[in-house]
Image (cartoon, rainbow, N blue to C red; front, side, top):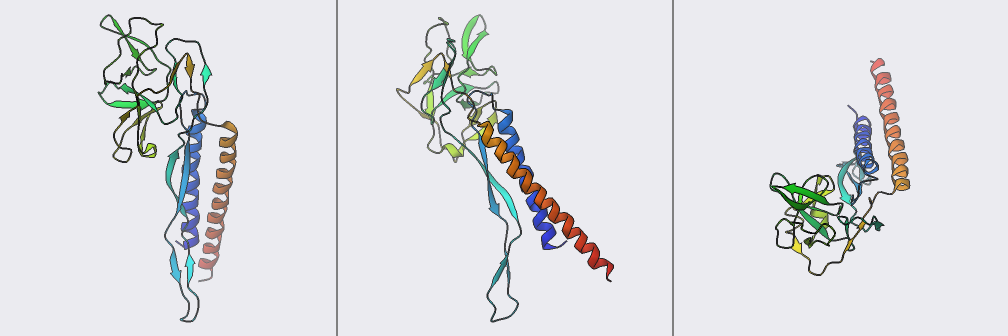
Length: 234
């Protein structure tokens, strides 16, 4: 396999991975509280080429790879719903906390909550059935459906260290640090935060990534033709 074939193949794979990220952003364009992901690329290893002692050193690249995806934690505005169980956090760095069925504590910016009947009592829960937690880490029992509930608000020192767990929820990691309670955070009742995905931007990304894939695919085909020609000369 030649260097050109390997480089183009790596480029196709990177473009496909980037397309997967963009497709997920578009799929969540209507998901409340969703934060878009941006793909970041990194160069693969370079080979040092030096034909003769006096010649300058030449570096030959071997393509790129999808190094990581960065979640964009920026405010996406608010939408009024006039529903008592809808809440929005005005600070883009803050999160609600919920308890999953498996006991894990997750964090979300999706404030579309509702009431869950547990043993004859009603508790505040998210759209997936996870129970919303107060500042003390306990579930919130609701006795007045129209009253503003006392949800806990948390933040992290390094938001980029959070790991997505699905359904607009995040898990803390060693890189994010432990959740820190936020006192006096502004919470608006009857509002929601829409998805942070911008459709026009994502469509532009689709076009760029498709062109990158096609260009690398043509390089693979061209390299294959060259190899066939060279082999036929033997």
